[in-house]
Length: 230
Image (cartoon, rainbow, N blue to C red; front, side, top):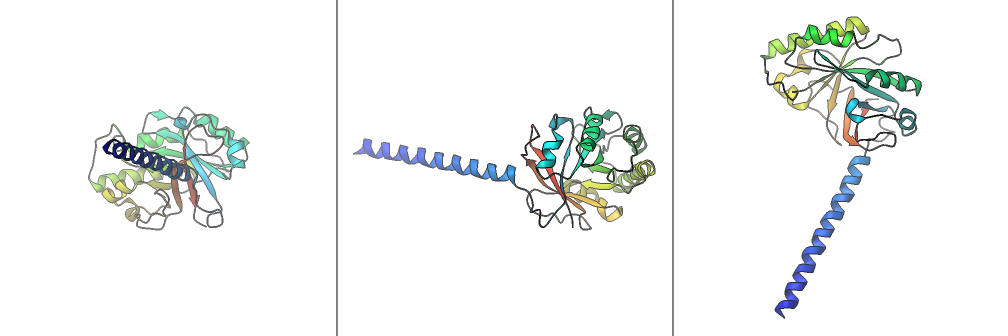
């Protein structure tokens, strides 16, 4: 009798484990395939850099992508090695394209702007430039708010002088809470939050990164999925 009870308990444990694994698979499958409805947000697109590998842009266009933001520069010294190829390929695929700079608290705004401005061509067809503002790995600097706001303003002003379009500020929740950038700098906001519309900025967002791990044909890795407010 005791042996049968032990076997029954073991079968129950195995069944529970299998059930939990199946639920996890279903949840993950839903998560990586989810995007906001096209009816609510007709304009949907991606942002990518070298980490996402070689993208088949015509395939992405067929999968509902209408625009792409492409990482161009990081800090004051780094240029994304895939930017030039992506910039040309996105245009050839008939998609709208925009450049993105990754901001660093550890480098002067003027040096970062020069890196961006010497990397990104000023083309009439491009979307407004974007700057990703977050705490970056390898940079422990945490200046006072007034210093940070002043540096970001200088960066945006220099980029805008080159691109002749207002910069879109893509800002993380943690950076916004630390420095309240959106309350100080009047630029369009690109907010970040998986699956649920974010509300952490001081103003309504213009663009929303709605899924940080979207699987789509034509991309070798999971990518960021974004929508534009109607």
